Amino acid sequence: MARLALAAALAAVPAAGALAAEALVIAHRGASGMLPEHTLAAKAAAHALGADCIEQDVVLTADGVPIVLHDIHLDTTTDVAAVFPDRARDDGRYYAADFTLAEVRRLSVTERRDLETGAAAFPGRFPVGQARFFVPTLAEELQLIQGMDAATGRTTCVYPEIKAPAFHRAEGLDVSAATLAVLRDHGYADDGDPVFLQTFDFQELNRLRRDLGWQGRLVQLIGENRWGIAPGTDFDHLRTPAGLAEVAQVADGIGPWIRHVATGAGVTPLVADAHAAGLVVHAYTLRADRLPPGVPDLAALVRLLVLEAGVDGLFTDFPGRTRAALEALPDTE
Image (cartoon, rainbow, N blue to C red; front, side, top):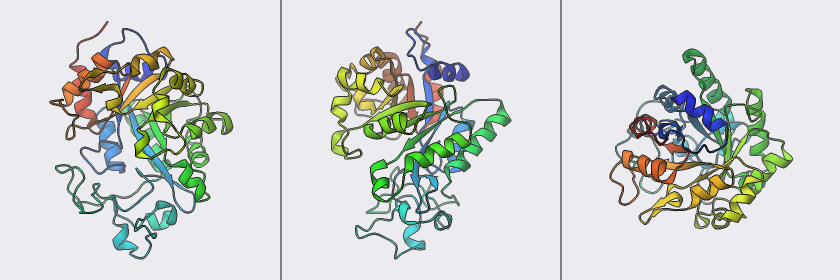
């Protein structure tokens, strides 16, 4: 069934009456409910748990190497402050763009922490500071996933996100061009390859397609304007039918926040509007330990998003539990 789900998703056309269990399970930063996010261990666990796709957030080092890290800062998931105590910027933060790959190699990765208190962002997950993990390069992660696929006879799609392209440009770095070079070197280049490329920045989405010549699948991530994550991108507009029509000119899908898809008042029209525009919908993020108000458990959230809202894929910190919840749903055809 997982292989059927991937094939259906890669067709990039929402199928009316598709089986509920065919919704893609997208491992958000790997099996991050089990192991520290974006470590190779978390990605190996996600693969073993049957994820259809595995996500990579991509930022650049000072020497232009794409590494897999959730954001442009190193301080909430590594011991950078202990290893390089004098390398913070004036705002007190440690930026990946200020460190070479050789310097990043000296860091240990830990479970995400609150910057102010040092406490775990998600209490009850992998203990902070336990075991030894490192920040992987994008190339290393792609090689790992391809190796696991070769050993198991599976095809797992990769799902990189271009992080903060405007910030990188201001630093004299081109995160999009560097990411595309690594993807192409590893056989991900066109719409027949098992890859989705995503970004919150609508201007960068257009650049990827029209200027950089990316032929693979593109997904426009949808956030909230108040988050300030993509200057110049109006997420309120992109959620309208007119905005979705603009997205459909360059992209194959959208990645909305789950609260854009369903709220306490019920299901929104976003998925139906996106499907009408020819876009697939992959919603983020399902967390068994941080559920939306009024949702009793992960299985109920899966039912709401898949059966009632009709999403085509789910970003989840818990790929194994999400897969089990999907397979327990009744078929809808």
